Image (cartoon, rainbow, N blue to C red; front, side):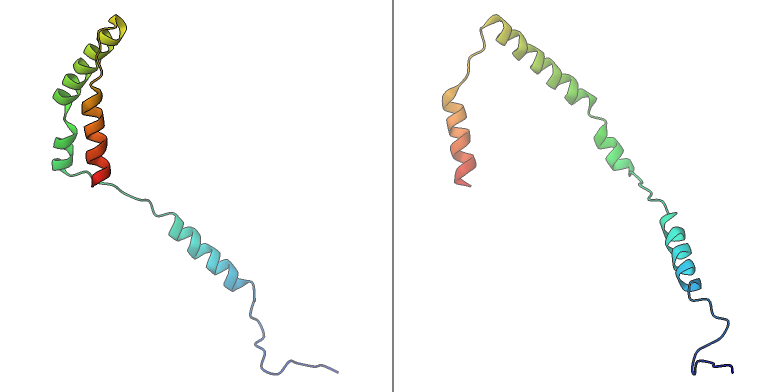
Length: 87
């Protein structure tokens, strides 16, 4: 005696859907991100003059600290803190 399920489709592989789903995920993950920097942004990166001036200032402060001649302006620090926290 042969019994067939009513409403079932013969010849359909239930794992085929999962394989197809995995293939679509791998295809989607193969896409790569691309970043383009505009010329205006590249121009902004060219701040070598500022970095050189900043480095000179840092070196001057380092020398003052090593010599013991660097003075801290406590009033300016306190005023800056007050301005920051009053905002």
